[in-house]
Image (cartoon, rainbow, N blue to C red):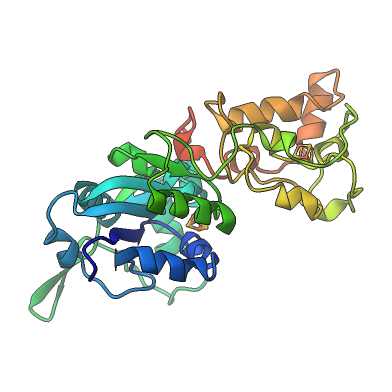
Length: 320
Ligand code: SF4
Ligand code: SF4
């Protein structure tokens, strides 16, 4: 191994693997990266053991990209381990940065999840009452499973994080920019959101805005949207007004409303609350009843508005 090469790691906590695929989707740049950096640990792509990382001196890794949220004790233990061993820790993707899709589980309790998945589910064997436990005796030994936490946390809730790379997943071009900046030593000061824009998505969206009002929100399958006009002004709950730009407005470009995966733009503390305000501003309701009718088109306001950021919101989790 060339001693001058960077040493990096990639890890996934509560994640789908899409962020790792975004790294691979940088195509031949991955080979350029391999020429500049040794990847010492990347469970989805490279063999490696936790023991290998534990054996490293503190700070031995130049950088770790951590995708996924923190849902269980293993996710948190590895977050602490990689923080100790890494000079730079990057939260890669919206699960890691904000809680992401796994963070929607904060809308229900741990007990409700276990009940639904293991006890009250049409696909389980009739009469089976097996629920995971942290310690299980098997053939004279004891197997251990990581504790399933009562809620989902962001990476920055459990360790100090140096940079956030938002997106679900982050656009591969943005991932490439961040990795290239890491290799060239040109990352901005710690604490920055990187691989994204400093403005809301509406400012980079090419659709025409006409200050139009809507009587009712609609689901995507209810209309065929006009390809030129603002989707929000056609009744689709587009998250552009309260979402950080940088993806290139790809979803609006293909007639899909922005889902909000880049998280809040600068100056917005709670993406979901700000979105509900933005959506309320386009309805033409004059009475509470008309407003209720308008929002009746959104069957799950909490889930749609906080789709990627519930653990990072002022709510943090539902009050159950
Ligand atoms: S941010 Fe999206 S793509 Fe990345 S791990 Fe989470 S769900 Fe998957
Ligand atoms: S609300 Fe959506 S469609 Fe309208 S301008 Fe913003 S990003 Fe584009």
